[in-house]
Length: 163
Image 1 (cartoon, rainbow, N blue to C red):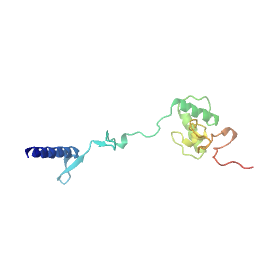
Image 2 (image 1 turned 60 degrees about the horizontal axis):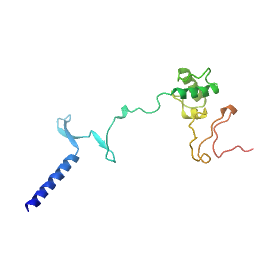
Image 3 (image 1 turned 180 degrees about the vertical axis):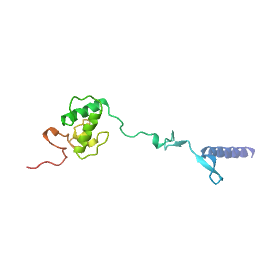
């Protein structure tokens, strides 16, 4: 009988300790009316896999591309020179002359002129994504590279000229 009471007491203490550990911590604060209230405080959040991570405010995150690397700038400059929007030799620096040339190119095509090139402009200049690693290039839904030297536009799969 005494052993049974000891196990029961031990089980109650274990359950109480587990519940106390799982309960969120609280902090007393006073509202404008002067009444004290309890607020839940959470410093960490648990993911679905049990790992802890800290929450970060949205304002501290940086989104999108902020600058253009030198080799990419050189490729863009070469394409703008080829299309007669820029003159001289490509420097590899994203300078004001290059920004102005890209803005004119995008404006002439009816696209928004931004501080960084629009993806449509890069694709039309022949600088779009590389499709070398595609497993099934014959059936992939991609457009053919633009050949502006012959005055052509982007090829759309499944459309052909009939003569």
